[in-house]
Amino acid sequence: MGVGTAQTTDASARPVLQVRNATKRFGAVQALDNVSIAAYANEVLALLGDNGAGKSTLIKCISGVHRFDAGIVEIDGLAHQIHTPAEARRAGIETVYQDLALFDNMDATGNFYAGRELSKPKWLPRSIQALDTQRMERETQQLLDRLKVVLPKFNAQVGLMSGGQRQAVAVARAAAFARKVVILDEPTAALGVRESRQVMGLVQRLREEGNAVILITHNMDQVVEYADRAMVMRRGRKVGEVRPSPDTKQDIVSMIVGA
Amino acid sequence: MQPQAPGPDESSIDDRKLSRPSGQLRLLTLGLGALRIGPLLILIIMVIVVSIATPLFLMPRNLGNVLAQTAVIATLALGQYVVIVARGIDLSVGSCIALCTVVGATVYHALPGFDPITASIVTMLAMLMTGATVGLINGSVFVYGRLPHPFIITLATLSICKGLAYEISHGQNITGVAPAVRWVGATQIFGLPFSAFIVATIALILLAGRQLIWGRWVYAVGGNPDAAVRSGIPVNGVLVSTYVISGICAAIGAIIVAGRTNSGSGLLGDLGELDSIASVIIGGASFLGGRGNVGQAIVGALMIGVMRNGLNLLNVSIFFQLIVIGVIIVLAVESDVLRAHLENRFRVLQAARA
Image: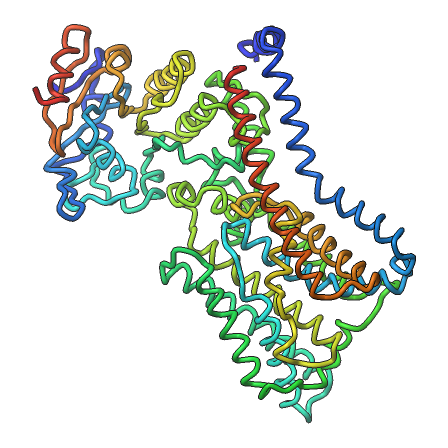
């Protein structure tokens, strides 16, 4: 019923990621109130809501930065405890944060592999294994080619790149390691029209490669153009779910502002 | 490959259309490059100027002196560089030297009946353990005590180590150190002080460390601590390790100083924190973390060593030297700020071109 993709097969009928009855409270603020969300493979789910609606809290809990006070997270139907970002990554969830979480002092390769460096020999403790720089650079180059991301200089520090290039590096990093779910928090908020299109192209490719994509955005045109399904939140609650189209655009906006 | 082919053509057209930004871009690249090699250039100029001002400077004996004096600063600077790359600071290294020399001398004098080799090994281990422990305390209290900045805890250990050193030595200068310690501090090999080889060894070890996952993590933590946490990097452990390394470097510096002066005293290593921090910053590492390399720390230490020695030879008072070092630190930090500004401009211009 809630499946937004046209080709509803048995595999896509079961959500890749399912969160049931999630609650989160920061002191007196009820950030999430009994929210449930399901994400399916080969689908872009737009997560909408005004500022303070609870979108960021929800995805931060899914990606392990915060913890739900109550609620169940299921990945491929199995209950998972996600307490740290590393656990989320291991479970196959990649996140592109609003601040990008890039290391300005490193090149694209360093950013791709931060926290999951390729190294040898395996019998040493991980922290004193030698970096396999060649292999990391080769695989980064291959990935950038596959995603058609062009950087000014392959070895340039990310801190010297333009906003669009930085965004592309952050999205490509998620694309490189995503196995199940990719979460993007306003990936085009700071970009111009052309750079936005490039990044959204990457997002589409993520979906084509079989990921469940969760996209937070304020751009309604983007929602209509790229999202298969839209879920609207207001004041920590889920207020509705719509299949976005030019006709339903006005309904979605009304849901967001609560009019 | 093929999709990339139009790339270069397009950008060359852009170059012609937007020649002004691209000219600025070239200027910025030049400026950033100059800032990068600036410290080495200044060091060379300093050497030339001092050699012209006083012919004594280039005498082999004096050069050996410069290296021996610089060795301690360089050892501290190498530890400090690791800490600063990870966005920290270690103010305790000077006092840590004092404590380690006193511990070393005391331990040695408590072992009168032992053969020189055993006594030397026990003494050196005691000194290294002392340094490592101070570093472990610095790192652990900073990280697990959830302090906002390492400034406070290392300032506290600066005071504690100094106090302990005076307390253990009863404020006296303890003369006589273990034979091996004496040897490390006072021997020359091929006309070079042995301590210079120790500095080279530490530098090589740290260079190798950059090729390890640990080294990558230190830079990641310094570059973006929040992102490092979100990337699953064990940030706390990395931070503690940097302070332990700084403490061990201080202990090695203590072995060199104790050997050179044949004593243990609460006065040794005084202002070592100033010299080491100054070296790292003057050498060109960023005070904001995440940038810097081993070579820069050594160049910075050499700059301070050459300047001290030159001013000594020219009979400039030691008080004036302190003033000069302070001024140089300000200039170095300002050039760091300037670089950040230039990089920002660079980014904006790149975006305009793309």
